[in-house]
Length: 269
Image (cartoon, helix red, strand yellow):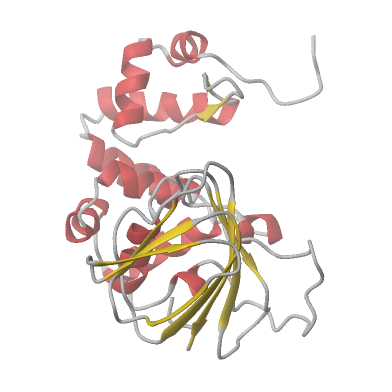
């Protein structure tokens, strides 16, 4: 037996342990009730905690007759708040969004409908801090009257005036292929970030907010679109300055990583 790590179950094994079919597991995943991890080859992997959650989902469905939306709400009420530094860096963003939703008295379906996403997508974000576009994350922050930077824990500490190369703190990776690293710690008049974009990574829509922005491409190639009709193709060494209230969207047009310095002032993103 391999004791080097936690047990991971394949779809068929997890379904058998939960007393349901493999197709039911896939249906529940599409409904946002549980999103399992993935192996390096892309296969679903279920933990022991996942199996326990599957059993609870089955109980709510069979014994209580709840629909998916009601099951999500019921499961939420059972999840205790997490503590510690790891929690604040990982699923902390999702928990902040859930707390804001609860404070507003809204259900998953209500907020998802207002934002224009599915309830399962919002449920996954609140549980894992993953699975949405940059535009959607911005829309949620605006909806709750806050900023993406605050949700990501950027203002939690004052921090040092010097941030050493390679020692950057990183936002929770809500969007696949987009890594945002902090170049300045604490509450400042500027949001100073280093963006690392995988090939094809994009904002997946245009957004806007108050302030002004400056970006400088360090490597790769970025396409930035302002107001849906002004296209800028930026390569290494190129810079762009624009007003944040203009709708802007972006995409990595390079076949490798694109790395850029991105500054917002005041910190409204």
